[in-house]
Length: 507
Image 1: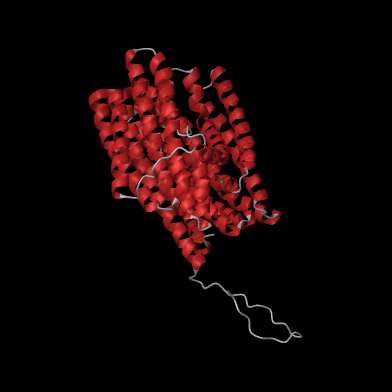
Image 2: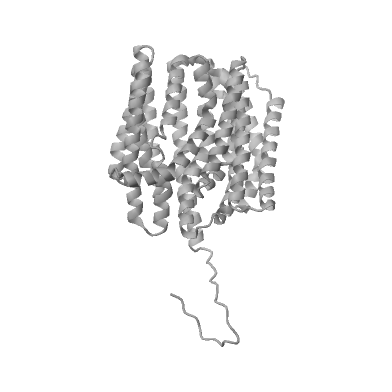
């Protein structure tokens, strides 16, 4: 309730507009967003670093053929993460917005209904994989591997839902603990089991790791939402979430269409060699994934308070520029260091170096456009996202299949993927700028601040590879030359980092 001082009708006094204090709610919200991003980024990179170590050791133990089978199982696990048909994504949309509107009971109901729907979807997907791939795969060993994969699908779905509920409640500290604990456990047990029992032992260790974390995490942290099945409520969540799921599924398809084409058209050994480099590009692509996971519940909370998509324009502009600056050293160092473990630890996989470097460079557009996709999801521009991603995935799949059928190699396949990444980034960024009401001047300034540094990065990396040739005679020489290239790159990027540190203000 507000009051105003008496005033004369002839000389009305406008109401005073309070000036927000420099350390008021806006600053607190920025600090909270930064803390949440720090938790998610630290745990995500820690987990992916362990998964990288696990992948390298398992690739060495299993060999290209068996590692190719595991790569095919990874693809099925990746796509089976969306078997909840959108109820989980609907919960991530509705629960934070309900909290922003002051309806805590409704938010809890969204989480409980989504829990029941997710479990049912995971159970159905696991049954289908067990019957189809586990029943028809050639050889008893292959069938047993797919049966274990079916169990992992269900456990993965349940654990993923629990972590999503933590994100929806913005409990990113507990989310970081859960992710890190699973990474440590699955890496240690997975390596030991792979060495002792091969692929099936590795899969059994992954299944056990999921179950252990599912048992312990709700006991020491926030409880698991009690699952319920309410058909009407579940249908509402699915209606909200299925466009988001389809948009995410199309993005996953775009990122993995090369491996799918290899699985269908080439021997498993070739898939095993090519897929190993994805462990390194995943480390780079973790940055946009982390930003999207942290940003979405905050954006939905903000929309619940302000109800205007134009309020997200500063977040899109400043956040995209910040992402681009953060991505430059990550992409550059990944390009310069990717070859070391493949060349000296896993020589059977050295053919993955050249396509891996190309895909490392091509990951930059996908990083930069991460916030654009998240903003479009937050303001319900799902159909536009699906059209863009569906079209890009179809074009990239056709190009990848054409390359492989024409006898092209892994480098040509990576080049086809790079073209698809660029097309997707350009189209999605244009949609996001229009949806948030950005002016032509703001859009042009953003494009200039993103494209120019990236072009400079590509030129610097190519120059480093020419001026400091990559033909070492020993591991020590390779380490020295790689360290020299990295030092020069970081030195050249230092002014940009200083400028970002001095001028950045969180949206």
